[in-house]
Image (cartoon, rainbow, N blue to C red):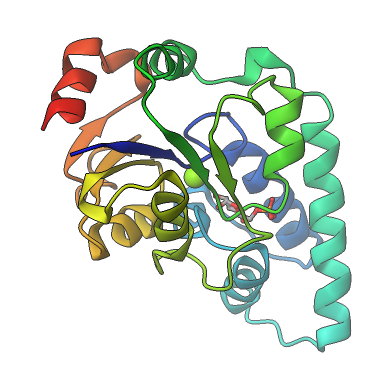
Length: 217
Ligand code: G6P
Ligand code: MG
C-alpha cells in the first residue's frame, strides 16, 4: 500500500528542543527553582500551555490564569529570540539527505508538530516547501500523546494509519504514533524512546536501504 512519512519538528528536523529547554529554565529560575534536562524529557512534544502547568507543578507554584498567560508570553518571547537567529545550519545532521531521498521517490510527507511556531521555523531553515502538508499546534485540539496531529497528517496525505511512518524525539509522540498503529521511529536516546518500533540516535544512522524497507513493507 501507499506509504506516507510524518515528521515531528522540534528535536527531529531542527535543533530547537534545546531552545525550548533554555526558555523554560529561565522561567523556572526566575520563579526560584531549578529545572533539569532530565525533567525536560517529559516536556518534549507537549503543548506550551500543558508544559507551563507541568513546570508550575515542579516548582509547587499556584497562579491565576492571568499570571499564567503572562508567563506563556514571556517564555515564547525568549524562545522566539533564539529562533530568529536560526539558519539552514540548524537543520539536524542527515535530515536533508533523508527528506531529499523520499522526495526523489515521490513519497508523500507531512509535518506533525505541537508547535505554534512551526511555519516560521520551517521558513527560516528553508524547508517550508518540502512537505505536502503541515499539521501544527494551530490545527490540533488534542496534544500528544493523543494521536490527532498524526491522524490528521495521514488523512491529508491519503494514507491509512498503519501505512504512516512517524519520526519522533519525544516519548509522548512515540506513544501517539503507537496508539493508532503507525510505525514509530525514535530519534534520540534509545533508552528513553524504548517504546518505538525502531531507534536511531540521529538521521546520519538512517540509510536508503532502511527507507526502502519502510516504503516497500
Ligand atoms: C513541540 C516541542 C515542545 C513545545 C511544543 C509547543 O512539541 O517539543 O517542547 O512545547 O512543540 O511549541 P510552541 O512553539 O507552540 O511553544
Ligand atoms: Mg519533538
